[in-house]
Figure 1 (cartoon, rainbow, N blue to C red):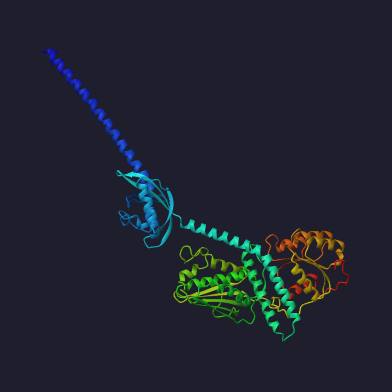
Figure 2: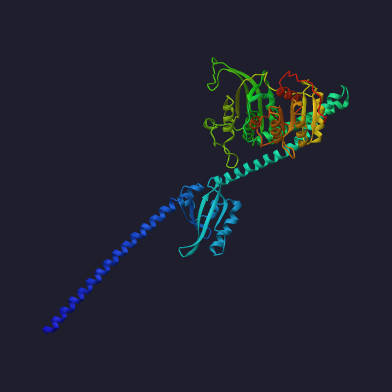
Length: 555
Protein backbone atom coordinates (compact mmCIF):
# COMPACT_ATOMS: atom_id res chain seq x y z
CA UNK A 1 0.00 0.00 0.00
CA UNK A 2 2.82 2.31 0.99
CA UNK A 3 4.58 1.64 -2.35
CA UNK A 4 1.42 2.37 -4.30
CA UNK A 5 1.02 5.72 -2.54
CA UNK A 6 4.64 6.57 -3.27
CA UNK A 7 4.20 5.79 -6.96
CA UNK A 8 1.04 7.84 -7.09
CA UNK A 9 2.83 10.80 -5.58
CA UNK A 10 5.71 10.39 -8.03
CA UNK A 11 3.33 10.23 -10.99
CA UNK A 12 1.62 13.40 -9.78
CA UNK A 13 4.92 15.27 -9.53
CA UNK A 14 5.88 14.10 -13.02
CA UNK A 15 2.57 15.30 -14.37
CA UNK A 16 3.00 18.67 -12.67
CA UNK A 17 6.48 18.95 -14.13
CA UNK A 18 5.18 18.10 -17.57
CA UNK A 19 2.40 20.64 -17.22
CA UNK A 20 4.94 23.29 -16.16
CA UNK A 21 6.94 22.48 -19.29
CA UNK A 22 3.87 22.87 -21.45
CA UNK A 23 3.07 26.17 -19.76
CA UNK A 24 6.60 27.43 -20.37
CA UNK A 25 6.38 26.35 -24.01
CA UNK A 26 3.06 28.16 -24.33
CA UNK A 27 4.58 31.27 -22.79
CA UNK A 28 7.46 31.07 -25.25
CA UNK A 29 5.01 30.62 -28.14
CA UNK A 30 2.94 33.55 -26.97
CA UNK A 31 6.06 35.66 -26.71
CA UNK A 32 7.12 34.61 -30.21
CA UNK A 33 3.62 35.28 -31.53
CA UNK A 34 3.65 38.70 -29.94
CA UNK A 35 7.03 39.44 -31.47
CA UNK A 36 5.76 38.24 -34.84
CA UNK A 37 2.70 40.45 -34.52
CA UNK A 38 4.87 43.45 -33.63
CA UNK A 39 7.21 42.70 -36.53
CA UNK A 40 4.22 42.43 -38.86
CA UNK A 41 2.82 45.74 -37.62
CA UNK A 42 6.23 47.41 -38.07
CA UNK A 43 6.51 46.00 -41.60
CA UNK A 44 2.99 47.16 -42.44
CA UNK A 45 3.81 50.60 -41.05
CA UNK A 46 6.93 50.84 -43.21
CA UNK A 47 5.02 49.86 -46.34
CA UNK A 48 2.16 52.21 -45.48
CA UNK A 49 4.57 55.14 -45.03
CA UNK A 50 6.41 54.25 -48.24
CA UNK A 51 3.18 54.02 -50.26
CA UNK A 52 1.35 56.99 -48.73
CA UNK A 53 4.35 59.33 -49.05
CA UNK A 54 5.47 58.13 -52.47
CA UNK A 55 6.15 60.74 -55.16
CA UNK A 56 4.15 58.54 -57.52
CA UNK A 57 0.46 57.86 -57.42
CA UNK A 58 -0.34 54.25 -56.48
CA UNK A 59 -3.57 52.46 -57.37
CA UNK A 60 -4.87 48.90 -57.06
CA UNK A 61 -7.49 48.01 -59.66
CA UNK A 62 -9.68 44.90 -59.33
CA UNK A 63 -11.56 44.26 -62.52
CA UNK A 64 -12.10 47.81 -63.73
CA UNK A 65 -12.64 49.42 -60.28
CA UNK A 66 -10.28 51.24 -57.96
CA UNK A 67 -9.98 49.38 -54.65
CA UNK A 68 -7.07 51.44 -53.32
CA UNK A 69 -5.37 54.75 -54.16
CA UNK A 70 -2.74 56.64 -52.18
CA UNK A 71 -2.66 60.32 -51.26
CA UNK A 72 -0.40 61.26 -54.19
CA UNK A 73 -2.91 59.74 -56.60
CA UNK A 74 -5.67 61.90 -55.09
CA UNK A 75 -3.53 65.04 -55.33
CA UNK A 76 -2.50 64.26 -58.90
CA UNK A 77 -6.07 63.97 -60.12
CA UNK A 78 -7.55 66.69 -57.93
CA UNK A 79 -9.58 64.65 -55.43
CA UNK A 80 -9.93 65.41 -51.72
CA UNK A 81 -10.96 62.03 -50.34
CA UNK A 82 -10.51 58.37 -51.22
CA UNK A 83 -14.27 57.83 -51.14
CA UNK A 84 -14.52 59.90 -54.33
CA UNK A 85 -12.41 57.31 -56.15
CA UNK A 86 -12.74 53.93 -54.40
CA UNK A 87 -15.19 51.65 -56.13
CA UNK A 88 -15.26 53.93 -59.17
CA UNK A 89 -14.35 52.87 -62.68
CA UNK A 90 -10.82 53.68 -63.85
CA UNK A 91 -12.53 56.02 -66.32
CA UNK A 92 -12.56 58.73 -63.61
CA UNK A 93 -8.85 59.37 -64.18
CA UNK A 94 -8.52 58.60 -67.91
CA UNK A 95 -9.29 61.01 -70.75
CA UNK A 96 -12.04 59.74 -73.10
CA UNK A 97 -9.55 59.57 -75.98
CA UNK A 98 -7.44 56.96 -74.14
CA UNK A 99 -10.08 55.00 -72.20
CA UNK A 100 -10.33 52.13 -74.66
CA UNK A 101 -6.55 51.69 -74.72
CA UNK A 102 -6.20 51.75 -70.92
CA UNK A 103 -9.10 49.38 -70.33
CA UNK A 104 -7.82 46.86 -72.88
CA UNK A 105 -4.34 46.89 -71.31
CA UNK A 106 -5.88 46.38 -67.84
CA UNK A 107 -8.11 43.48 -68.90
CA UNK A 108 -5.33 41.64 -70.72
CA UNK A 109 -2.96 42.10 -67.78
CA UNK A 110 -5.43 40.65 -65.29
CA UNK A 111 -6.00 37.69 -67.62
CA UNK A 112 -2.27 37.02 -67.47
CA UNK A 113 -1.63 37.97 -71.11
CA UNK A 114 1.66 39.68 -72.04
CA UNK A 115 1.26 43.47 -72.27
CA UNK A 116 3.71 46.39 -71.91
CA UNK A 117 4.38 47.17 -68.27
CA UNK A 118 5.04 50.86 -68.98
CA UNK A 119 3.05 53.18 -71.21
CA UNK A 120 1.58 56.69 -71.32
CA UNK A 121 -1.95 58.01 -71.50
CA UNK A 122 -3.75 61.33 -71.19
CA UNK A 123 -5.33 61.70 -67.77
CA UNK A 124 -8.21 63.88 -66.63
CA UNK A 125 -8.54 65.65 -63.29
CA UNK A 126 -11.72 66.12 -61.26
CA UNK A 127 -12.08 69.68 -62.64
CA UNK A 128 -11.83 68.42 -66.23
CA UNK A 129 -8.30 69.65 -66.93
CA UNK A 130 -5.91 67.20 -68.56
CA UNK A 131 -2.43 65.94 -67.74
CA UNK A 132 0.07 63.58 -69.32
CA UNK A 133 0.52 60.40 -67.27
CA UNK A 134 3.15 57.68 -67.37
CA UNK A 135 2.00 54.40 -65.77
CA UNK A 136 4.04 51.37 -64.70
CA UNK A 137 1.73 48.39 -64.01
CA UNK A 138 2.12 44.80 -62.86
CA UNK A 139 -0.11 41.78 -62.14
CA UNK A 140 -0.59 40.86 -58.45
CA UNK A 141 -2.91 38.68 -56.34
CA UNK A 142 -5.04 40.73 -53.94
CA UNK A 143 -7.69 39.19 -51.68
CA UNK A 144 -7.42 35.98 -53.66
CA UNK A 145 -8.12 37.63 -57.04
CA UNK A 146 -5.87 38.83 -59.90
CA UNK A 147 -5.54 42.62 -59.81
CA UNK A 148 -3.47 45.43 -61.31
CA UNK A 149 -0.95 47.34 -59.20
CA UNK A 150 -0.22 50.65 -60.97
CA UNK A 151 2.32 53.38 -60.27
CA UNK A 152 1.34 56.62 -62.07
CA UNK A 153 3.45 59.73 -62.58
CA UNK A 154 2.53 63.19 -63.89
CA UNK A 155 4.87 63.83 -66.85
CA UNK A 156 3.11 66.93 -68.21
CA UNK A 157 6.09 69.23 -67.62
CA UNK A 158 8.51 66.70 -69.07
CA UNK A 159 6.37 66.27 -72.19
CA UNK A 160 6.08 70.02 -72.56
CA UNK A 161 9.86 70.42 -72.23
CA UNK A 162 10.38 67.73 -74.86
CA UNK A 163 7.96 69.48 -77.21
CA UNK A 164 9.68 72.82 -76.61
CA UNK A 165 13.08 71.25 -77.25
CA UNK A 166 11.73 69.71 -80.44
CA UNK A 167 10.41 73.13 -81.48
CA UNK A 168 13.80 74.72 -80.75
CA UNK A 169 15.50 72.08 -82.89
CA UNK A 170 12.96 72.64 -85.63
CA UNK A 171 13.67 76.38 -85.56
CA UNK A 172 17.41 75.68 -85.65
CA UNK A 173 16.85 73.49 -88.68
CA UNK A 174 14.80 76.25 -90.32
CA UNK A 175 17.59 78.71 -89.55
CA UNK A 176 20.16 76.38 -91.09
CA UNK A 177 17.94 75.91 -94.14
CA UNK A 178 17.43 79.67 -94.42
CA UNK A 179 21.17 80.21 -94.29
CA UNK A 180 21.69 77.55 -96.94
CA UNK A 181 19.30 79.10 -99.45
CA UNK A 182 19.99 82.75 -98.60
CA UNK A 183 23.25 82.93 -100.54
CA UNK A 184 21.73 81.76 -103.83
CA UNK A 185 18.48 83.65 -103.30
CA UNK A 186 20.27 86.88 -102.51
CA UNK A 187 22.37 86.53 -105.66
CA UNK A 188 19.15 86.32 -107.67
CA UNK A 189 17.73 89.37 -105.87
CA UNK A 190 20.99 91.26 -106.36
CA UNK A 191 20.73 90.78 -110.11
CA UNK A 192 17.05 91.82 -110.14
CA UNK A 193 17.72 94.94 -108.05
CA UNK A 194 20.92 95.89 -109.89
CA UNK A 195 19.67 95.52 -113.45
CA UNK A 196 16.31 97.16 -112.66
CA UNK A 197 18.17 100.15 -111.19
CA UNK A 198 20.29 100.37 -114.32
CA UNK A 199 17.20 100.14 -116.52
CA UNK A 200 15.49 102.92 -114.55
CA UNK A 201 18.51 105.14 -115.17
CA UNK A 202 18.40 104.48 -118.91
CA UNK A 203 14.62 104.72 -119.43
CA UNK A 204 13.28 108.18 -120.16
CA UNK A 205 10.37 109.73 -118.29
CA UNK A 206 7.08 108.93 -119.96
CA UNK A 207 8.21 105.51 -121.11
CA UNK A 208 5.47 103.02 -120.04
CA UNK A 209 8.15 100.44 -119.29
CA UNK A 210 9.63 102.68 -116.58
CA UNK A 211 6.69 102.05 -114.24
CA UNK A 212 6.92 98.28 -114.72
CA UNK A 213 10.65 98.26 -114.07
CA UNK A 214 10.09 100.39 -110.98
CA UNK A 215 7.63 97.76 -109.70
CA UNK A 216 10.21 95.05 -110.40
CA UNK A 217 12.78 97.02 -108.39
CA UNK A 218 10.36 97.55 -105.48
CA UNK A 219 9.52 93.84 -105.43
CA UNK A 220 13.20 92.98 -105.37
CA UNK A 221 13.75 95.29 -102.38
CA UNK A 222 10.79 93.70 -100.55
CA UNK A 223 12.20 90.24 -101.26
CA UNK A 224 15.60 91.30 -99.95
CA UNK A 225 14.11 92.74 -96.76
CA UNK A 226 12.05 89.60 -96.18
CA UNK A 227 15.16 87.41 -96.46
CA UNK A 228 16.99 89.69 -94.07
CA UNK A 229 14.17 89.41 -91.54
CA UNK A 230 14.25 85.62 -91.71
CA UNK A 231 18.02 85.60 -91.30
CA UNK A 232 17.84 88.11 -88.45
CA UNK A 233 15.57 85.78 -86.46
CA UNK A 234 17.85 82.81 -87.16
CA UNK A 235 21.08 84.50 -86.07
CA UNK A 236 22.61 83.51 -82.73
CA UNK A 237 25.05 86.41 -82.41
CA UNK A 238 23.98 89.69 -80.77
CA UNK A 239 23.43 92.62 -83.10
CA UNK A 240 24.83 96.09 -82.59
CA UNK A 241 22.58 99.06 -81.90
CA UNK A 242 22.30 101.65 -84.65
CA UNK A 243 20.07 104.64 -85.39
CA UNK A 244 16.79 103.42 -86.92
CA UNK A 245 13.38 104.90 -87.69
CA UNK A 246 11.00 103.11 -85.34
CA UNK A 247 7.98 103.91 -87.52
CA UNK A 248 9.43 102.23 -90.61
CA UNK A 249 10.55 99.24 -88.54
CA UNK A 250 7.06 98.88 -87.02
CA UNK A 251 5.40 99.13 -90.44
CA UNK A 252 7.61 96.36 -91.85
CA UNK A 253 7.14 94.12 -88.81
CA UNK A 254 3.37 94.60 -88.78
CA UNK A 255 3.28 93.19 -92.33
CA UNK A 256 5.10 90.11 -91.10
CA UNK A 257 2.87 89.82 -88.02
CA UNK A 258 -0.35 90.30 -89.96
CA UNK A 259 0.21 87.10 -91.95
CA UNK A 260 0.21 85.04 -88.72
CA UNK A 261 -2.94 86.41 -87.07
CA UNK A 262 -6.41 84.81 -87.23
CA UNK A 263 -8.92 86.43 -89.58
CA UNK A 264 -10.99 87.61 -86.59
CA UNK A 265 -8.17 89.91 -85.49
CA UNK A 266 -7.37 93.05 -87.50
CA UNK A 267 -4.46 95.45 -87.08
CA UNK A 268 -4.55 99.23 -87.31
CA UNK A 269 -1.29 101.20 -87.50
CA UNK A 270 -0.68 104.91 -86.95
CA UNK A 271 2.78 106.53 -87.09
CA UNK A 272 2.44 110.09 -85.79
CA UNK A 273 5.81 111.09 -84.37
CA UNK A 274 7.67 114.26 -85.30
CA UNK A 275 10.88 112.30 -84.95
CA UNK A 276 10.97 108.52 -84.50
CA UNK A 277 14.72 107.78 -84.51
CA UNK A 278 16.04 105.52 -81.76
CA UNK A 279 19.35 103.71 -81.25
CA UNK A 280 18.41 100.06 -81.35
CA UNK A 281 19.11 96.55 -82.51
CA UNK A 282 16.47 96.22 -85.25
CA UNK A 283 16.03 92.47 -84.79
CA UNK A 284 15.38 92.87 -81.05
CA UNK A 285 12.87 95.69 -81.60
CA UNK A 286 11.12 93.46 -84.12
CA UNK A 287 10.93 90.81 -81.43
CA UNK A 288 9.31 93.32 -79.04
CA UNK A 289 6.68 94.21 -81.66
CA UNK A 290 6.01 90.57 -82.53
CA UNK A 291 5.73 89.47 -78.91
CA UNK A 292 3.38 92.31 -77.94
CA UNK A 293 1.29 91.77 -81.07
CA UNK A 294 1.06 88.02 -80.53
CA UNK A 295 0.14 88.54 -76.88
CA UNK A 296 -2.62 90.97 -77.87
CA UNK A 297 -3.96 88.56 -80.51
CA UNK A 298 -4.09 85.73 -77.95
CA UNK A 299 -6.16 87.92 -75.63
CA UNK A 300 -8.71 88.35 -78.44
CA UNK A 301 -8.71 84.83 -79.87
CA UNK A 302 -12.27 84.10 -78.72
CA UNK A 303 -14.11 87.31 -79.68
CA UNK A 304 -11.67 88.90 -82.13
CA UNK A 305 -11.25 92.65 -82.46
CA UNK A 306 -8.66 95.27 -83.33
CA UNK A 307 -5.05 95.69 -82.31
CA UNK A 308 -4.12 99.37 -82.45
CA UNK A 309 -0.39 99.97 -82.86
CA UNK A 310 0.96 103.51 -82.86
CA UNK A 311 4.28 105.35 -82.82
CA UNK A 312 4.24 108.77 -81.18
CA UNK A 313 6.66 111.03 -79.35
CA UNK A 314 6.63 112.17 -75.74
CA UNK A 315 8.55 114.43 -73.38
CA UNK A 316 9.08 113.30 -69.81
CA UNK A 317 9.13 116.35 -67.55
CA UNK A 318 10.09 115.92 -63.87
CA UNK A 319 7.38 118.45 -63.04
CA UNK A 320 4.61 116.37 -64.65
CA UNK A 321 1.65 115.70 -62.32
CA UNK A 322 1.88 112.01 -63.30
CA UNK A 323 5.62 111.28 -63.35
CA UNK A 324 7.13 108.07 -64.71
CA UNK A 325 9.62 107.05 -62.01
CA UNK A 326 11.32 104.47 -64.25
CA UNK A 327 12.11 107.10 -66.92
CA UNK A 328 14.67 109.89 -66.85
CA UNK A 329 13.46 113.31 -67.99
CA UNK A 330 13.88 113.81 -71.73
CA UNK A 331 12.46 113.06 -75.16
CA UNK A 332 11.13 109.62 -76.06
CA UNK A 333 9.58 107.72 -78.94
CA UNK A 334 6.58 105.71 -77.73
CA UNK A 335 5.37 102.41 -79.19
CA UNK A 336 1.80 101.67 -78.06
CA UNK A 337 0.01 98.34 -78.52
CA UNK A 338 -3.66 98.38 -77.53
CA UNK A 339 -6.03 95.40 -77.72
CA UNK A 340 -9.72 94.73 -77.04
CA UNK A 341 -9.11 91.41 -75.34
CA UNK A 342 -9.81 89.84 -71.98
CA UNK A 343 -7.66 92.23 -69.99
CA UNK A 344 -5.87 91.44 -66.75
CA UNK A 345 -6.50 91.63 -63.04
CA UNK A 346 -4.23 93.72 -60.83
CA UNK A 347 -2.61 90.55 -59.46
CA UNK A 348 -1.74 89.35 -62.97
CA UNK A 349 -0.37 92.77 -63.98
CA UNK A 350 2.02 92.69 -61.03
CA UNK A 351 3.57 89.44 -62.33
CA UNK A 352 3.15 89.84 -66.09
CA UNK A 353 6.87 90.41 -66.74
CA UNK A 354 8.08 87.60 -64.47
CA UNK A 355 9.91 84.82 -66.34
CA UNK A 356 7.81 81.66 -66.75
CA UNK A 357 4.65 83.34 -65.45
CA UNK A 358 1.73 82.69 -67.79
CA UNK A 359 -2.05 82.67 -67.67
CA UNK A 360 -2.24 80.52 -70.80
CA UNK A 361 -3.26 76.85 -70.62
CA UNK A 362 -0.56 74.18 -70.63
CA UNK A 363 0.98 73.80 -74.06
CA UNK A 364 0.09 77.34 -75.24
CA UNK A 365 3.01 79.21 -73.74
CA UNK A 366 5.77 79.10 -71.15
CA UNK A 367 5.61 82.72 -69.95
CA UNK A 368 8.79 84.05 -71.59
CA UNK A 369 7.35 86.41 -74.23
CA UNK A 370 6.76 89.48 -72.07
CA UNK A 371 9.81 88.72 -69.93
CA UNK A 372 11.90 88.90 -73.11
CA UNK A 373 10.18 92.17 -74.06
CA UNK A 374 11.01 93.64 -70.65
CA UNK A 375 14.67 92.60 -70.95
CA UNK A 376 15.05 94.07 -74.44
CA UNK A 377 13.43 97.36 -73.47
CA UNK A 378 15.69 97.71 -70.42
CA UNK A 379 18.75 96.94 -72.58
CA UNK A 380 17.74 99.86 -74.80
CA UNK A 381 17.50 102.20 -71.79
CA UNK A 382 13.73 102.36 -72.16
CA UNK A 383 10.70 101.48 -70.05
CA UNK A 384 7.41 99.68 -70.51
CA UNK A 385 4.09 100.43 -68.81
CA UNK A 386 0.78 98.61 -68.82
CA UNK A 387 -2.81 99.63 -68.21
CA UNK A 388 -5.44 96.91 -68.19
CA UNK A 389 -8.86 96.10 -66.80
CA UNK A 390 -10.33 92.64 -66.65
CA UNK A 391 -12.69 92.23 -69.60
CA UNK A 392 -11.75 95.59 -71.15
CA UNK A 393 -8.44 94.97 -72.91
CA UNK A 394 -4.87 96.10 -72.31
CA UNK A 395 -2.57 98.93 -73.34
CA UNK A 396 1.21 98.45 -73.44
CA UNK A 397 3.41 101.52 -73.90
CA UNK A 398 7.11 101.14 -74.64
CA UNK A 399 9.32 104.22 -74.24
CA UNK A 400 12.61 104.47 -76.19
CA UNK A 401 15.00 107.42 -75.77
CA UNK A 402 14.96 109.67 -78.84
CA UNK A 403 18.07 109.32 -81.01
CA UNK A 404 19.86 111.61 -83.45
CA UNK A 405 17.85 111.84 -86.69
CA UNK A 406 20.96 112.87 -88.65
CA UNK A 407 22.53 109.46 -88.04
CA UNK A 408 19.54 107.37 -89.10
CA UNK A 409 19.68 105.53 -92.36
CA UNK A 410 17.00 106.57 -94.81
CA UNK A 411 15.55 104.33 -97.48
CA UNK A 412 16.99 105.16 -100.88
CA UNK A 413 15.34 105.20 -104.30
CA UNK A 414 17.02 104.13 -107.52
CA UNK A 415 16.80 107.73 -108.74
CA UNK A 416 18.64 109.16 -105.73
CA UNK A 417 22.02 110.71 -106.41
CA UNK A 418 24.89 108.53 -105.30
CA UNK A 419 28.44 109.53 -104.35
CA UNK A 420 30.93 108.77 -107.11
CA UNK A 421 34.70 108.25 -107.41
CA UNK A 422 37.46 107.37 -109.82
CA UNK A 423 39.47 104.77 -107.92
CA UNK A 424 40.31 101.31 -109.23
CA UNK A 425 38.27 98.38 -107.89
CA UNK A 426 38.84 94.64 -108.18
CA UNK A 427 35.47 92.87 -108.06
CA UNK A 428 35.18 89.10 -107.48
CA UNK A 429 32.02 86.96 -107.46
CA UNK A 430 31.44 83.42 -108.71
CA UNK A 431 28.12 84.44 -110.31
CA UNK A 432 28.74 85.66 -113.89
CA UNK A 433 25.47 87.58 -113.81
CA UNK A 434 26.58 89.55 -110.74
CA UNK A 435 30.00 90.18 -112.24
CA UNK A 436 28.36 91.78 -115.29
CA UNK A 437 25.84 93.73 -113.22
CA UNK A 438 28.39 94.99 -110.67
CA UNK A 439 30.89 96.01 -113.34
CA UNK A 440 28.18 98.12 -115.01
CA UNK A 441 27.07 99.62 -111.68
CA UNK A 442 30.57 100.51 -110.51
CA UNK A 443 31.56 101.99 -113.85
CA UNK A 444 28.41 104.13 -113.81
CA UNK A 445 29.69 105.55 -110.51
CA UNK A 446 32.96 106.55 -112.19
CA UNK A 447 35.22 103.71 -110.98
CA UNK A 448 37.61 101.69 -113.09
CA UNK A 449 36.80 98.04 -112.63
CA UNK A 450 38.59 94.75 -113.04
CA UNK A 451 36.04 91.97 -112.50
CA UNK A 452 36.18 88.18 -112.55
CA UNK A 453 34.05 85.19 -111.55
CA UNK A 454 37.08 83.04 -110.61
CA UNK A 455 38.71 83.53 -107.20
CA UNK A 456 41.97 81.98 -108.42
CA UNK A 457 42.01 84.35 -111.40
CA UNK A 458 41.43 87.27 -109.03
CA UNK A 459 44.45 86.23 -106.97
CA UNK A 460 46.58 86.10 -110.13
CA UNK A 461 45.41 89.55 -111.28
CA UNK A 462 46.14 91.10 -107.90
CA UNK A 463 49.51 89.34 -107.51
CA UNK A 464 50.73 90.81 -110.82
CA UNK A 465 49.75 94.40 -109.95
CA UNK A 466 48.97 94.67 -106.20
CA UNK A 467 49.48 98.47 -106.08
CA UNK A 468 47.12 99.12 -108.95
CA UNK A 469 43.97 98.55 -106.89
CA UNK A 470 42.47 100.92 -104.35
CA UNK A 471 39.69 98.59 -103.19
CA UNK A 472 38.69 94.94 -103.44
CA UNK A 473 35.03 93.91 -103.29
CA UNK A 474 34.36 90.17 -103.27
CA UNK A 475 31.90 87.46 -102.35
CA UNK A 476 32.42 85.24 -99.31
CA UNK A 477 30.96 81.96 -100.62
CA UNK A 478 32.97 80.92 -103.69
CA UNK A 479 34.38 77.63 -104.97
CA UNK A 480 38.11 76.86 -104.85
CA UNK A 481 38.97 79.77 -102.49
CA UNK A 482 36.46 81.39 -100.11
CA UNK A 483 36.33 85.13 -99.70
CA UNK A 484 37.91 84.98 -96.23
CA UNK A 485 40.79 82.82 -97.48
CA UNK A 486 41.27 85.07 -100.51
CA UNK A 487 41.34 88.13 -98.24
CA UNK A 488 44.19 86.56 -96.24
CA UNK A 489 46.19 86.12 -99.45
CA UNK A 490 45.52 89.69 -100.60
CA UNK A 491 46.56 91.07 -97.20
CA UNK A 492 49.67 88.87 -97.17
CA UNK A 493 50.69 90.29 -100.55
CA UNK A 494 49.74 93.88 -99.68
CA UNK A 495 48.95 94.58 -96.02
CA UNK A 496 46.17 97.09 -95.28
CA UNK A 497 44.66 96.93 -98.77
CA UNK A 498 40.97 97.94 -98.34
CA UNK A 499 38.70 94.92 -98.66
CA UNK A 500 34.90 94.65 -98.57
CA UNK A 501 33.55 91.12 -98.10
CA UNK A 502 29.96 90.57 -99.28
CA UNK A 503 27.79 87.72 -98.04
CA UNK A 504 24.21 86.57 -98.37
CA UNK A 505 24.52 84.68 -95.10
CA UNK A 506 27.42 83.23 -93.17
CA UNK A 507 27.53 81.77 -89.67
CA UNK A 508 31.24 81.09 -90.11
CA UNK A 509 32.30 84.75 -90.28
CA UNK A 510 31.11 87.46 -87.92
CA UNK A 511 31.68 91.17 -88.34
CA UNK A 512 34.10 91.16 -85.40
CA UNK A 513 36.16 88.32 -86.86
CA UNK A 514 36.19 89.97 -90.29
CA UNK A 515 37.57 93.20 -88.78
CA UNK A 516 40.15 91.22 -86.82
CA UNK A 517 41.35 89.69 -90.11
CA UNK A 518 41.87 93.16 -91.60
CA UNK A 519 38.68 93.29 -93.68
CA UNK A 520 37.33 96.84 -93.69
CA UNK A 521 33.62 95.99 -93.98
CA UNK A 522 31.34 92.96 -94.03
CA UNK A 523 28.35 93.79 -96.27
CA UNK A 524 25.05 91.92 -96.44
CA UNK A 525 23.95 91.16 -100.00
CA UNK A 526 22.14 92.35 -101.99
CA UNK A 527 23.00 96.06 -101.93
CA UNK A 528 21.27 98.83 -103.83
CA UNK A 529 23.21 101.29 -106.00
CA UNK A 530 22.95 103.95 -103.29
CA UNK A 531 24.10 101.54 -100.56
CA UNK A 532 27.02 100.34 -102.67
CA UNK A 533 28.14 103.88 -103.50
CA UNK A 534 27.93 105.02 -99.88
CA UNK A 535 29.78 101.93 -98.66
CA UNK A 536 32.67 102.49 -101.08
CA UNK A 537 33.12 106.12 -100.04
CA UNK A 538 32.88 105.08 -96.37
CA UNK A 539 35.64 102.51 -96.80
CA UNK A 540 37.92 104.65 -98.97
CA UNK A 541 37.26 107.86 -97.09
CA UNK A 542 35.07 110.69 -98.28
CA UNK A 543 36.85 112.92 -100.82
CA UNK A 544 39.81 110.57 -101.36
CA UNK A 545 41.68 111.48 -104.52
CA UNK A 546 43.68 108.54 -105.83
CA UNK A 547 45.90 108.90 -108.92
CA UNK A 548 44.34 107.66 -112.13
CA UNK A 549 46.62 104.70 -112.93
CA UNK A 550 46.34 102.60 -116.09
CA UNK A 551 44.46 99.32 -115.99
CA UNK A 552 46.28 96.00 -115.89
CA UNK A 553 46.51 93.80 -118.94
CA UNK A 554 43.46 91.78 -117.89
CA UNK A 555 41.14 94.70 -118.46
